[in-house]
Amino acid sequence: MTKRENDTITWETFNEGLWRENPVFVMLLGMCPVLAVTNSAINALAMGLATTFVLLASGTLISLLRRSIPKQVRIATYIVIIATFVTIVDYTIQAISLDLYNALGAFIQLIVVNCMILGRAEAYASRNRPLKAVTNALGMGIGFTFALLCLGVVREILGAGSLFGFDLFGPRFEPWVVMVLPPGGFLVLGAWLLLFEWLKQRKARTELEPAAET
Amino acid sequence: MAEETLSFIFLNAVLANNFVLALFLGLCPFLGVSGKLNTALPMGLATMFVMLVSSVCAYLINMVLVSFEIEFLRLIAYIAVIASAVQLVEMTLKKFSPGLFRSLGIFLPLITTNCAILGLALFQTFKEYDFLQSLVYALGAGTGFILAILLMAGLREKLELSTMPTITQGAAVSLMLGGLLSLSFMGFAGLGG
Image 1 (cartoon, rainbow over the protein chains, first blue to last red):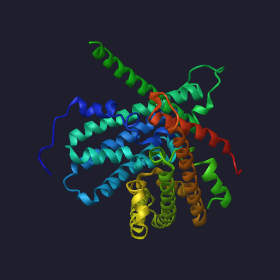
Image 2: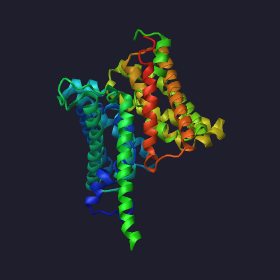
Image 3: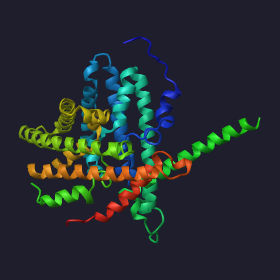
Image 4: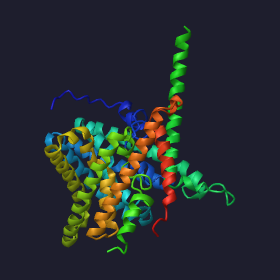
């Protein structure tokens, strides 16, 4: 291991996961829980927080152990570390709220195979000091939670006419049920991606135009 | 043991509760490898094979775990078994069919992090299927995965030939297609009882 690690923690370390390389909207990682549990805002929030915890804890541990893990078995080691923390989260949620546990179902345990977490472990935590790895993991986690909320809020408002369980439109609202069913997940995420792509292209155009006039 | 007939389990896993389109499992390969029909099919077959192997392994492992009352190790044990099963498939393929091994390339090791595999192992445990039911469930889930990825690949090959607005080029249109496929698969809901 070289000593050339860049130790400075900047806003960029944090912002990378939050916005610039948002795991869901930009990198399309960890799609399964993103679509499966975002049928209501509260489920989305719980899933986001659970994933953030696993991301933080496994990032810290892997970063601390990065010099003692043999290179050949690193992926297996990472997976076992991640699985341990997921088991902790699984039992904790079961103890705190059984309703939430039943709503999320197997998807809590499936955090293990969220490629975002393994990807971060391999690409970031194993190469950086704990503090820096934690900052980055926090950004990623918040970015992931934010993306889940984006989907959860839209799907719950359209599909059930409520937000975090509170009725928004009164009894005369005809819910758009398909939005809380599986197709809604695909369609809403597709719509968000379209929106971001449109914003990006518009920004690129406005940056180009003044340059072209001069 | 769950009271479900084998044909119901199979149809349920293929159509009504299709792993990709209704349960959102295995989306990464579904979106990533569905660009062309001739890579989608081998990927589907390899996934199905790993599903069968890991389903059998998970059933045996669960029996051991339950008999020692250490169920809290289930997740760790399953993921370790799946990783080794994928490794085994990889080595077997390399020895007996190098051509297929080369054509699958990087996708083969990535099957480990396909949540459809772990999801299958977990679901069959939750539903308390016996050995034969687990096997049929794995077969159904694999068939469903192949069906979904082939349909998607066919649609995307057609789409290559048409002109689209620039903002839809990329993942967005795949997701929209997935939404439409999923909508049509909802028509199977309630099939088989």
